[in-house]
Image (cartoon, rainbow, N blue to C red; front, side, top):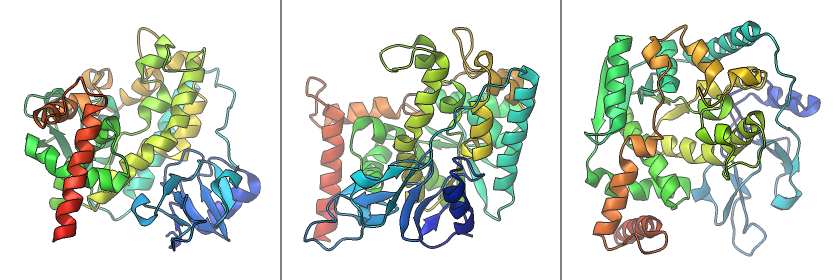
Length: 380
């Protein structure tokens, strides 16, 4: 059980991590207030915001788990510790992402990763929550689904890649699948809720969050308590094309360095996704973001990360121990494209008069939907 002002871990465990500087103390992330200090784990798995306007005349809390509670919400840095009420620039990094020596024995590295993933999923199964899985048909969500033995839900427009991929993967796994078919009106309705919950209106963030929100709505309506996702696998194990190409999107000059860049980027991405799922009334569950899995991933040798022939090589080797080969080896599209949400949101924006020749035309459309929703709420 966690303290009311601390989420994700027991206070004594966080105190020990503070004392010993342990970056990966065996949690799935934590954040909040403890002993007069604000803390956030090294990967930023639990959202934490401080108020950039706290030193003004406006009465406002100093920090919150949700951006909507603050006048000027600013993300608290991952791995940081700071006295409550101190200006954000004074926050000092207390935990750093470990940089262990890679395991030279490939078999040993894969065994360690297998054990870590089983440890993480076992910790999820020990709870009394009713869990469903956001299932896209890719290897990440398929492994979560297999290890948790939980119901599968896919969301997308009827002709989308994700719906078809989820159907074929579920058939290969011998599992039933619930399909949440979308129509344009679902996006128009959900955009304001997603923007409010996350505090973000840029097109990319909203497009990524919408499928999570819409599948979460259905899962919550069906009586579940939590939504399990395969988040973190691409970042931890080298799932992105850019880590192989080493193009303008990364600063690193090696695949290993690019993977570490991806891991560090999680602290900005995860608040969006966590807040989106929580906005549906569900608890997000991400087994691959457990400290045990992170530690095992950091020790994978370069040959088990990614190259031009295969991405997430080590992760796929582990997944193949549980999944049919055709599922363990398959790639998938990013959720905003695989579900066709990005395409349909762009089309709605253009229909509303926000043409592509305009700068950030989808951003402007999102902002208009949010403004309209807030106007309607204010007039009720």
